[in-house]
Length: 320
Image 1 (cartoon, rainbow, N blue to C red):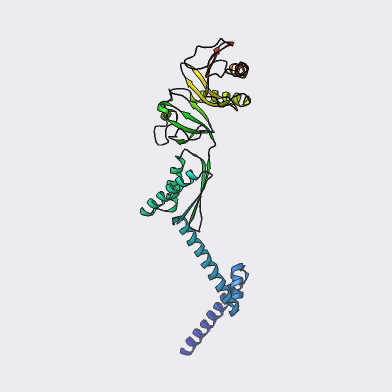
Image 2 (cartoon, rainbow, N blue to C red):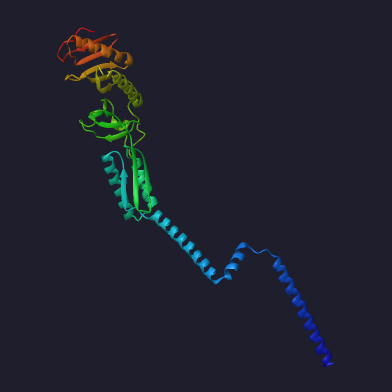
C-alpha cells in the first residue's frame, strides 16, 4: 500500500517536470520570435568584445563630457558680464561718450550682480535715447568682449531758435548735438527761427516727447531744403550762409558774393513765390555789379521789383 502511494507520487513529479520543461521550451521559442532592437544587437556584440566594449564606454563618456562642457560654457556666456568694451563709430566724440556710458552701465551691473542679458537690455535702452545715434548693434562673445557698432546721422544744418540756442540737425530731422557754439559747424547751412523754442520742436528723449511745437517744423524744413537747392544751382553768383524765418516777415537769406571780401547781404523773400524770387536774385546781383554797387540788403518781396540798400543809413536806390 505504501509502495503504491510512493510510486504514484514519483509519477506525478515526473509528469510535472515534463510539463515544466515543455512550458520553458515554449517560452524560449516565443522569445526567439520577438525581434531584437538595433541597440540590443550592438550591445550584445560589444559586450562579447572586451576591448571594443572599453572603447565604446570611453567614447560615450567623451561625448557626454563635451556636451556638458559646451552647455556649461553657454550658460556662463549668457550670465557672465563682459570685461572689455570696444566702440566702433565714425565720430570720436560720440565714440568716447558711448564708451563712457557703457562702462558706467557695466559698473552698475556688476555692483547689482546682474546677468549679461539684463545688462545688455539696460545698455540698449540707454543708447536708444542718444540722439546722435541712428542705429546700433551689440555683440557679446565668449571672449568676454563687448563690441558696440554705431551708425550716426549725416549732419544737415544748424538750427538756431529763441535765445540763440543752436542744435545740429541730421538728415532724419533729429538732433545730433545740442548747445552748439557760434563757431561750430560753420560750414553747414544755418536756419534761424527766433520765434522757435528748440525744446518744443526737439524735446529730449527723456523729456515730454509729446510737446506740441509752436509751428509746422516739417514745412519749415521742406521750404529750407528748396531754398538751399535753388541756391546751390546759383553757386557761381552767390553763396548761401543762412536762412531765417519769422511769422511776420517770412524768409530772409544771408548770402555772400563769391570771390569778394564783401559783407553778408540780407535778401528778403517773404513766403510766397519763393522759386520765382530766387530766380530773380542772380539778375539783380549782376545788375548791381555792373553799376559798381555792393548791396547790404535786397528786398525781393515787391512783385517784379527789387528794393536795394547799400548800407543801413543810406537811402534806398531806385528799384531795379
